[in-house]
Image (cartoon, rainbow, N blue to C red; front, top):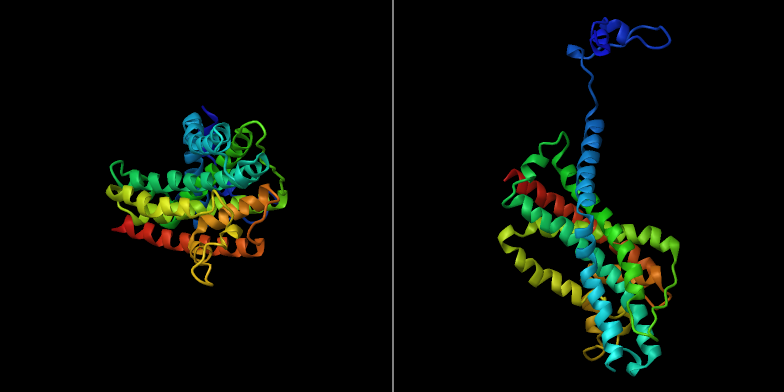
Length: 309
């Protein structure tokens, strides 16, 4: 007879007897073991996140190549090709000016990698799962509230954003021509707080975009949302340098880009990885947290509507 069968023949009272020999605890109906709703939801959330990370581990090289292509090309063209052909950007093409531009660009490509990771890991996946794969129907059957299923996508995407930042920074900092150098100065307390906040904010944006656009209209999302965010997000320039672009006394571009969440991510990356001028951190942190709350609230609402419709 197996150990399991021996255990199953024990009286319920002996299995629920507390160690101290006191009165026996009430056994659940049917003799089974029950968990609270909170414990079940927590276990389901962990399982959903773990599933996404296992898939990421199996496809890690695909993930790494997808993550590195755009940052590598940006640094290769702007920091290697342009100086080599005498068209270096910054300071009239001098080595000092090109190095200053490299110092601005490298944190920018880290920020844009985090943003694209949020779009690819959440928005594009949502488009597939709500579209032809219908995988979302399996996910929402997990023993947890519907909003936790969406939150699991946000958190697993944020982990992928952290991995992409760790991959992109060293690669981007070494891809440059001779004489061009990105001057990095790591501020660890900013890195450990702002980078995770940026990752969760961008994946929350991915959740909002993925639940706002129909799968057949995903191209419109890139054309009308992602591209403007990218080019007006301060990847290639500092927000503090936009003051000369004005209409009369109004610094219109410096004002308009403040509605772009990527500008705060990139300015935060410059504060984290360099000593270059940047937007004040007492502005970056609360505004990014506000964007996170807004994107997450709207994304969860849209997700619930899409699932129940």
